[in-house]
Length: 302
Image (cartoon, rainbow, N blue to C red; front, top):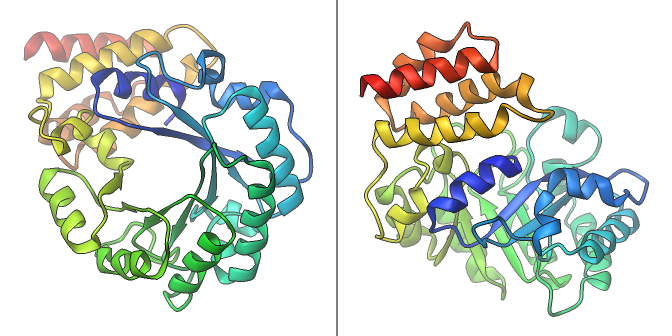
């Protein structure tokens, strides 16, 4: 989710915190402009225009370099630091980042310990993991390493890297992790509606949830989970899509807009049957203006 999507979803309400797309850290202290590109909210007290805090997420495998960049992000104004140990992407894992670090609890401890050194206690240091890389044999040990190294919060996606996003999701493993650490655990994975959220809370024992794909499928999912509103219907979603498109008609991401909308529709199909039909209609669209016209036409027909 880029900052435009964060702004759109937080304007609806119900979301307590956003985490940026990961900032890839290799061997350099990145300049401020890189962090601002990922999180323009840094120039707004690290909040979206709706007032929702935004935390910079870092991904890498060099403890000292991650610490240097965490210090830089905090200096610019990030609302804490998040460490990504869960990304399943092959390109990321090939370069020793993301979920591949779940093979080494010692490395996780080293990274979190070093980053904690530069993150003051009044700032939150959080981390995200999966249940493991190939299997779940190190799930508890990994979580304990992160907790003992000084993290304040731990988000857990209830699958391994090898399981990707394939069902089933293993929320009961999050309960095991929560029993094994002394920091708050946040449950993640396959939360697409109120029923999913309720079952996840019951099975995992977690009071806090992280939603990603579910928030794209149902844009007001956070409100739904909190009992504030009913799920958005298709006309309301088209209104949001139109708003997102109008924002994107200016700026460096305009040429990517049609593909972003198609990607969004792929997620929406999980909860919105109309999204499948609309995706078929716009599949060959290549320009922002064509996409804008298609969305406006669909909205008029509702």
